[in-house]
Image 1 (tube, rainbow, N blue to C red):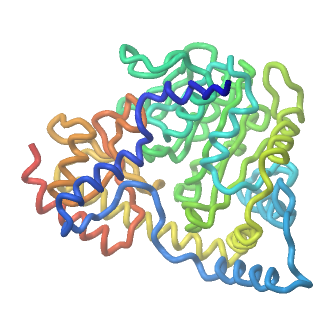
Image 2 (cartoon, rainbow, N blue to C red):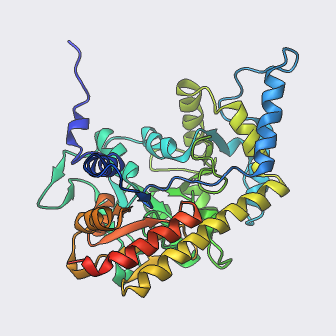
Length: 411
């Protein structure tokens, strides 16, 4: 008799973004003429940079010719792309080998799948608030007995609160943990860790034979050159950290799908020597994955070219301009805001002690603007909302004007 994976039933609630869509659609069904302005999900809106488009069209031309057609590529990623990634990290003073890069169809899947390399007995620590896939994938992976209303979190998970008083930067665990999920610039708070703050986690991980899973998907939004864009800029990180990155938010590849994971050969944990975890991930990818789209990889190679980087960074600047418009607009209403500057997200405190979902409903119904409630990212997110800068600038301006005009109705 077949049995289901009952860990799915341990998930505390529906996935955050489908719930946002459900509430939005319910409002639209009652108000079909409403013009909804979406500043919720971090989905890019602007056209792909021309160099990337040209590279993908050229690849399609090759695929349309029998003499130049190609099918399956290497599961780890095309060699020229992996070598281009080596050069990309070299710009940050980081030396890696092409065999330590594994190209994928995006960071989200890798962030979930990477925990397959580690024992179910591992104690996992998460930034709180955090991107939901980190927590949910470990629930499904069987690392918790279930959700505790008393704890306001999952049993056996260690939450590292990111609050106003600590600048939304997590503190070192006060107990021994085995896996640590970090994201910088952070989604959702927009906070960026300094070299010193990251070094504390790297030292902790090396001392405890723990592994850091570092999500750097928003690294191109860091405009302050004093801040690290890769965890490998920190001494000692190669022996304790896996880094996940993506072109989704830097080159508009949310729909094209292309990312990568770095598993250094120097990486070790309690029961493995150098090279073992790299080899395990290689085996995992070869067994479960046929490689990223060859068209997307051609676009990725274009994105990492000199002209591609110029065009992609102009796209990043566009969204950062949007973030500035949002932050200035909300602050003019007296709201306390964080993020922006080095991040595409604004982390705003809800007014009048409203809950995250109450403020979500107010903005939807009164202003026709969709944002993301902070409580959906974890217990420490309550009392905040995330506003995304991903949108056409004219729509962002229109959304902010609507909020300003209707804010007097907030209760």
